[in-house]
Length: 148
Image (cartoon, rainbow, N blue to C red):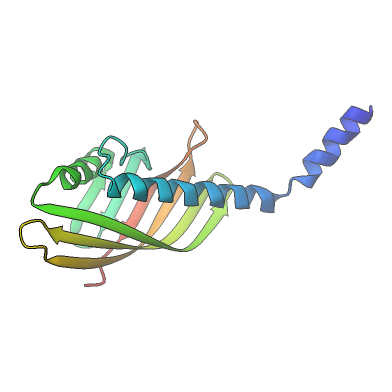
């Protein structure tokens, strides 16, 4: 009986806020891993952040699914005429059970390998995550645009 009471107390002690901070930490870790993989040109890893059901919208570009998004990322990482580098600012992460929304700003630096010329593109966006059956948080919807 004492064991049952101890389990009940433990279950009540784990608050929704603890669950929310754990989810937020997991999402921050996923973003950090993706940024590291992209900047290290690990083409085999850059799609790990996205759910297979991904739908992405970027201003001025037709809607894309998982396969097209991964193709674009892989082409960028294997390009020899340019080098791409991302930096991320997370403005906020809101968690609602197994769904979370992240307001973010990516800064993409593109360097021409032949001239060294650099261009920066500021990309605010909204990423919608879902906790997948494997317990990983992945983006299944996102909307982004450049500040251009």
